Length: 218
Image (cartoon, rainbow, N blue to C red):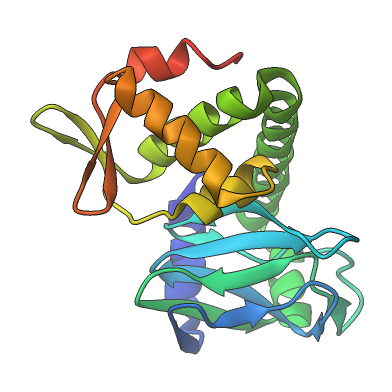
C-alpha cells in the first residue's frame, strides 16, 4: 500500500491524536464506536475472542496504518470487529470521525484507491494466515509466527536476526491457536536444540532462518 497518500491526508487535516499506554485497550470486539483509528507510532495488537472465551491473536501493527475496519460508511456508529490492545510502552493514534473519513474518501480518488488496497492486503493476509494454520500443524504454526515476527520486528545482528520485541509464549500460543503457553515453550526448546533460535535478553534471536522456513508450508 502507498502509505504516503494516507500520510498526506493526515498532515493536511491535522486530526487530533490520542495516546494509550501498554496493555490498555483502544476498542473491544462488539463495542460501538464512531471513529476510525490510524496508528501514528507504537505497537498494537488485534485479537478476537472465541465463543468459549479464548483469545485468538490476529496481528501486530507497528507502522502507519488504519487499525479499525471501516465497514458500513453510512452509519455513525459501528460495532468494533476485534479487540485492539496497546503492546508498546505508549502508542499514539489519529482519531477521525468515521462519517467525515468516508466523506473525504468519497471525494478523493487517491484515498479510494488506498482503501481498496487496504481491504485487498488485509484479505490476502487473512487468507494466508488461515492457510498456514490449517496446513502446518502446531509446530509449523509456531515457526510461521516466528517468521512473521522477524519480518515485522527483525533486526540483523551478529549471529542472526533479532526479533527486537518481547513476545511471550502465551502470546505466541494465542497467535497459533495453541491452548497453553507450556506447549509453545516445548516447541521453542525443540528449536533451540536444533540451533535454529536462542534467547537474548528475553528476545528471540533467529540463528537459522532457513531451518525455520523448512517447517512452514507457504
